[in-house]
Length: 540
Image (cartoon, rainbow, N blue to C red; front, side):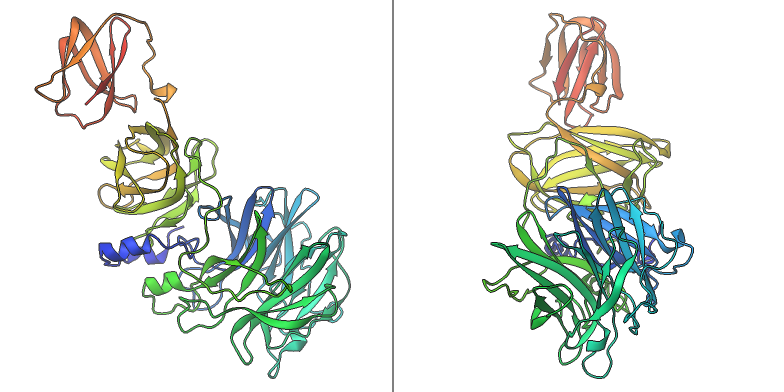
């Protein structure tokens, strides 16, 4: 999907770019997102969001975006996982919420402000199916006739009972008539009994349910966006999800980088022993100097803490975001669409479905000087090689690898030409030097004009990838001597027919005799094979 803002180039200084590269909020910048909700599934946190269509002047959100993380810094973009056109009745998919039960994931969404639907999948990223084939919650249900029937939030209690909060719009000065909670049956696709009214002062929209248990004491929280008297995310506390809501307090005030807009929507969740709040602001659209930022939003995450009396400490929203909870392992396949940040102030990258083996998603629309940041990569005691899975129809592409900052120490450059087709994927490699310990990793993309290449995944390794080694492995007493007076010249201990490969497995020089000249080749590591069946490493 081509984004309209890609037709604009923003002139920014290197100082501004370097400062921007350290920001972690918003958590996704390749697509406008809003109205987040969270699902912790096994060891992974999934956040579901409305997708703000580029340039929309009204809310045209008809698909749902999902991102996930295991470390709270690097987020995998799963793309648009459900669309209203996958139903026979809905036109929109506003403000989604997902819960898991009995091996299924249930994805709830608002069809605009008219009604609430649900789709079902076997995995948090789908594929989701509209099994019910009609709305789950409508205004015709008992006590559900709210002006805006949307913004579902579903909580499953310890006894298996599920509850769904919903509603919106302000009547008079309070709007307390418009907040609702209704029970769901065990099938998660039908309701039980009448909805109850929640007395939520100043309620406007964006209700969210969560619970917290300390030393056997359980408390339920109903948070929401308030626009009467103040513009805040407020919350209520109760001992029962259906009654007794009170103790009104503030979760957070208008987020920073929200422009003149005061509305927001937030969810609260626990992940790996810490509590967080996800919300949206308008930082990306502000940074891009858009004329209308109101409906071009971006989701963020900040840490949330409680007081001893179960009340919530007011959250101060940040640009830096939250701490990383675990380091990233570079020795396994890492999807290119998993990142902490990207170059949205330039042309910005995009993600799309991938044609490579294993399908999934890829980075695409990569332009010269675009980049991505991967946070907290643990290179341990040293890593020697980098592999990128790429496709391109252009020559002269490179991926420069830097650590610690966008213009920090360069640890390697992976160079490659056209693969002859965007559907023809090849693994390209380069040597790595100076990568030890934990660092932020920056992949900087270079080349000509236009869309340079697609990137499916990357991986580091401590030895030459087996598939790239020349096949002949016979031993011999052949010796290779680098010329001390001229870099790139090598002498062999006997005259042979030889071939030199780069680490992509591509032939770069063929000859006969006892001298090899690589002085015009890029510095790095090469593989020499001879007619004796000998493999040697050459360091240029």
